[in-house]
Amino acid sequence: MDALTEYTLTASKYALIILSLLIIVRCIRSMLSDQYEGEVWGYLWHQSQTFTLTHWENLIGRSPGSDVRLAFPKISRSHAVLTRNDKGQWRIYDIFSKGGVWVNGVKSGDRGLPVVHGDLINIAGESLRFYELSHDARLDYESGRTVAGQGVSPSVTLFELTLLQLFLLLQHSLTSDGERLFSIALAFIALIALEWCCYNAMRVINRSGFEVETLAFFLTTLGMSVAASSTPDDMYKQIILTITGVVLFILTGWWLRRLGRTAAARIPVAVFAVILMAVNIVLSEAVLGARNWLEFGGFSFQPSELVKVGYIYVGASTLDRLYRRNNLYAFIGFSAFCVIALALIGDFGTALIFFATFLVISYLRSGSIATVLLAVTGAGLAGFLAVSVKPYIAQRFATWGHAWEDVYDKGFQQTRAMSAAASGGLYGKGAGAGWLKDIFAANTDMVFAVICEEQGLIIGLIMVLAVLVLAFFAVRSARHCRSAYYSIAACAAMSMLLVQLALNVFGSLDLLPFTGVTFPFVSRGGTSLISCWMLMAFIKGSDTRRNASFVVRPDKPVDDDDGGADDDGSGTVPEGFEPGDDPSDWEVWQPCEK
Image (tube, helix red, strand yellow):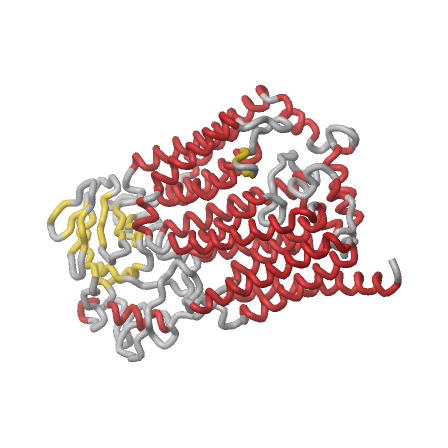
């Protein structure tokens, strides 16, 4: 390597670190520092207390976690659920309370009762008056909410990502031969064009929040670099799979815009997932103890990666209907089938991811620690059985923490991963200049070490931080979602990605048993990349900031200042009224047009 080439490579390393830091810091500022104001849909008035309805599913009860908390002895901890559908119709359900629920003197049954503007709701003897926010007042309130991406320009962040991609391409041009360089360059240029097309498409539909996509494209870029280093002959396939993932991300988000059709499709999605896993069990062939792959028309894919998306889709949709207990039992059965099917094909890493996601979904809907502990106990017994039946799983547990004791056999992959990661130092050797990429399954199961070797520990940690930022964002957004479906789906999707991240990173470094799962977006694998992009649709759907999510349909704000939002954008009560006043006197409380 001549002096000019070495200087160029060194300069590009520093440029990549600076650009990566700028991208992650700007996304953090935009995602976690923006003011979040929940949407307002109506109010419940009880004596001198006014309860704001900021969700489409509002839990009424005595527990501190209730959306409408009535601290009276006759009120059950979880007494009733007041819901709103896509058409603006409200309905209240008695969720097995002792005191009962009445609307205008009519007792609620299993199917609930409709509620309209001005109705009197009786909860175990306590009367509440329901008021729905008028259409104009809701638009006025919406105009006072913070616009996403206002403080940090998403186009500037995307431009920085483009520069990072060009510097990565420059590094590959220094380490790749002429024949393969053309396909690598074409893949990176196509990725740049794809992200800018996606950004402009969002701007066309008046969407200014682009942080989720930017972080996903950042991780996808690192995955593209791994593919260019390890399998440069497959770059055309890699970009086609990336385009497919982004298109499915947009289509999934469009589908989630209407909760009615989303809930209606949960049974077909569950049936499709069951059939897919059953076909996987019957037709797949074992490779190194696992039968993860199916061959179809000359292409191979991993069914469990697609089932991940369906699992969250079904789980969030089913448990959202908390007042129907049979739906909960059906989801438990569906979860058990998925985990057992994964165990039968020998994919215990993915089975663990599914189980962790099941715990998150169950806790979000039930709030019961006892239920979670019971599930964990059952899983522990099942794990003990699996270790007894599958010797190679017990071998992996035996190797855990002792990889250096057998560097040529049981600890072969982990020791190579740790050595390569350490040899990369803080700044790395440069894209394509590492040797770990030539080890079996390095670009999938040990991709964190590949990145650390070629790009350095700093970018490896930034890569992990990008996933963590998405997780914090999903949790923060979940508290303000208009529907529990989006909250559950976003948290479940991030829990799935976080467990996957932990197993990949810590497993390759011998801090956890080596399970062979992929790093989200970065590990090579088309089905994994597509499923990660589809999971992003759930996280994007939870973002209810103004002009942020493609799930929330924008309404044209009104220009008058009559009622609705206060000057600070809170919009909780009209100016001049006290919290104890009867909302029926407020001008904004007119029946909302359906």
